[in-house]
Image 1 (cartoon, one colour):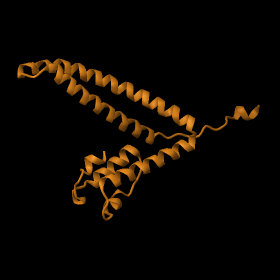
Image 2: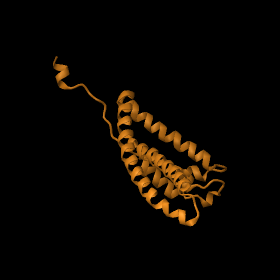
Image 3: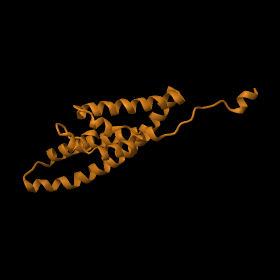
Image 4: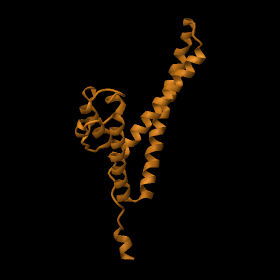
Length: 156
């Protein structure tokens, strides 16, 4: 995500901090001083990326501490499996479409099998990136409340 808005080896004037801030807020539901970080003298895209990871990890750790690590792992597992299921189904449909289209490349003196292998691997990498981003975003937006003892437990 950072690489999309802050190209490697680019000048600070070329960075798109506004859109990065908006995307970070939309996905991770955190307000970070990205403009202030970008204004610092001598800061690079890697430093901003590390700070972003650290800030989001701290936010996730706070959420996990509120509800307990066991509950958080169950929620993470459920979100991951549900998201993976949906993305995998989409991926299989995309591969089927690619299989139908790639045969035409034989007319262009290209090996359809090699074309399919290359493009399917790229599609798989894109699916994994979407999985990471989607799961992270969903986990950051989930509002969990600590499980309190029910009144029935107190009556016994």
